[in-house]
Image (cartoon, rainbow, N blue to C red; front, side):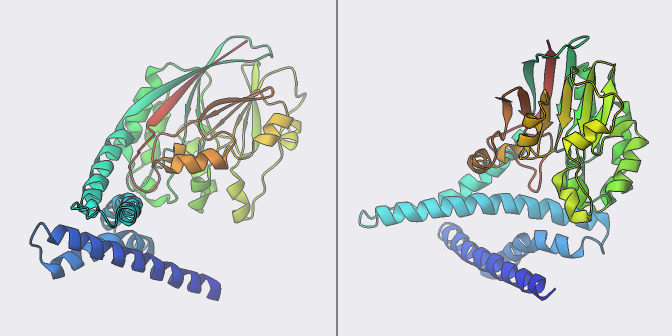
Length: 372
């Protein structure tokens, strides 16, 4: 407990120091061009920079509207802060390189403008939905070609709500898929706004031949109400597979795995061997599809000769250049890859975590044609 308190104090100190330095630099650059009241600037900047922390501290004690406002302001500010820090560092390096050249250009001011522009552009791309198509051939026999609609990382909550989910359902139905797979992070860490606005209800309108199947992601477990979420989904015709296997159309197997985060909540993640052995007369000649939210654990799918794994989690970095980091962290952080006999599809996801912004990626729905 003491370590936790000390960690929180250290974080607040570092975060506060960074914002103090950033705010001081922003004020200096703006005040050189525009006459602004220093006290008013301090008040506004303090509210902006502290809004997300304030949200986290009081979200369980205040009305939903206040939570929504704080989350919205705070998440946008975090995106702005990310880019302003990056651009200020670049500006500082440029000034150091040309320190004897008397640059008559306030790069910090233009960094502020560029950060604001990036936030606006990122907002557009987070709402612009793309359809990504993959054609995947497998060696095992299928009765018929299977058209799979894959979505992930919807992050329902304070920012992504009913209207956005209704749009998703309409897009999914327009693709006429045989089966819909949701690869985790349906909810953004808090089930309260989802319950209050009955957000899951429109999921029952998804249409497909074989149904809708979902495996839980890390943010679904962060709610602390994974069992309640599973119960809610069962009422809207979404089949939650928690380390479970099912046979579809007597043609192929579908396995849904709990995210590894389940271990934090005193749960266990069964191995693929255990999951396969749980079904009577498992036929290894039939194709096997695995839904696993995090693409980090590919080795087990490869060693078990899984035909297709679908994942999300990475958001393709969401805010470039974070995609350069995810590219190094995962064997595949986005797109289609082939590892021995296992095809892997990782989607950038439909929603966003934190700032409702995308730079270098787009909100997407994936259409997979699986055939012999």
